[in-house]
Image (cartoon, rainbow, N blue to C red; front, side, top):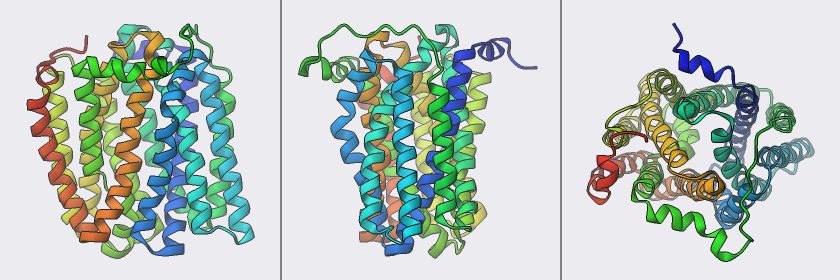
Length: 403
């Protein structure tokens, strides 16, 4: 029988509208990323260029994320999210025209990656700061877990659907993604909440206030930086086209399944956390989950069997989700509402560094050591990070409860 507190979440109409909008947007974004990666590899057959796609998203996002956090504390967060969805829909439209017109080049893919990076820079702080305004505080951990579940459904279905649609051509993927991004934008325009904007006048001090806030709270600093270095070293997403085609000998369909596998594990774990949230020893469990993520990454790196690779990726996704839900809940509970946009921006910097910069790191190390060497070394590095953070951040290790 469904937990009564979990059932209460389904009575939060604005939160459910937000979930559906996020589902459509994330689903479309994942389809877009699969098509971009496969199209880039078709054009250049270069691991370095796959890494550059991540770098060209990360750098502009890094430059704009702190001002984006300040905007999220001053303006309506739902409308910011809606505009970001429209920007990504415009990218999908450009890619449709470029693919049909025969001018979808390496340079164009890198150029639209810049636009995607800026759009996500403004989307992420607004998105992260919305949930606490849509649900009561005592439901927040379950809301974060359920929101994570929704995202993982999209991350599972998006790559798989994108891979299947790519068989009919990249244009098909871009058209479907563009329509879903428009739907997401429309839904977010109808999300209502009591917005309490920051009264602080824009200045260097207020823009950088989120960094100062996190730096002074070592539990938050430890949790956010742990995720940064773990995924930066252990992530293998950028190399999945190489693994699919050259190591596991599969096609776009196999690539879609490989990209979906971590999300499948994360979905199972986030549903479990929504039903049975962590109550005790949250710090130690977070560190243990990161260590397990490293082990699963090493197994994936060494695997030559498609099924074993899928299982290893699913375990890595489940372990990572424990860290994600714990980190996001701690950040939201320990941050006042008028600061959530700027603190969310800091968190987004770390997420962007771990994902987009991690893709560049994977491509660069794969160019030096080969894809297998890159993934295995990254997994070992993640294990070392978990051990090191246990000593560097004792307050995080000792954190017993969420509140």
